[in-house]
Picture 1: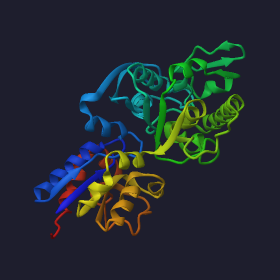
Picture 2 (picture 1 turned 180 degrees about the vertical axis):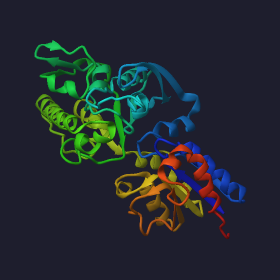
Picture 3 (picture 1 turned 90 degrees about the vertical axis):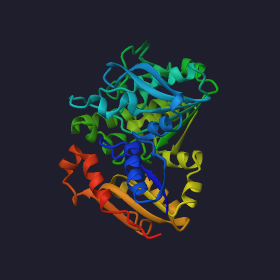
Length: 368
């Protein structure tokens, strides 16, 4: 039988590439014809997709992490298009084991990557918004691209972060527009969150990035203050636009000051790599991600891909790390999860490949 494997990453444990290769090896050994493509909805695995498809177009650039530590990061420059993952210079994994407040972390290093791509000829920037440890409204990124943040009449020289936004009294984006003339931004997001409120950047996501309740309140004020500044500067109030709360408000800052559009990451991949045809030519479609829950139906890859597969009348299998809720009723024929059948959550995180392989060994014997 022909099987299409379209797996997203198990966040923090297995990449989409690792998962796809394991699934391919399992079903190929059973005699099936397997094709796979790593997919992402804009999160941590987004850049991996393009690194796999365009391996000779990977660039490395000196930059800095969310706490200012010097580092190198990768991006893909294919022709005039640059594919960049926010997490590469502003990701949660870069402060692993350190106590850091998202009020003090910055996306500045991501802006350095974008600047490098533009200087190398990029005319379209495709930025995957996911996995960030920042809630700075994209101010650090914008600062690296030339936006000046003013405290009264003096420019703020320190790296912009969420807490520092409260000090800003005006912005000057002249230099950034000169640098980015003719450059288009696509922001690939997997959430439709607004900037403010209970489902916004601070209240919905700051806690998982290490913020205390006091810091969450501070960040909410900072995002509101930033929204007021941008609205006054541009004449457009975008704080309620779906997706501007993604990645700590990066969507808001870039959409507010630059020529940008927010798109669903999985929609972008479906169109670019003709995933519809891959599904149509297969008998079975395998999808999955780390956790199946209520957010899966809000722009996540498995939801979109299962819809496509069902429309073509394909048999759909879902492979997940764990299942909290199932919003994919009627779209998936089989659901398998590592937790709790094969391991508890702690053990699964310690030996993810081992337990995923054990799960694979119990499935996949199809008649065809």
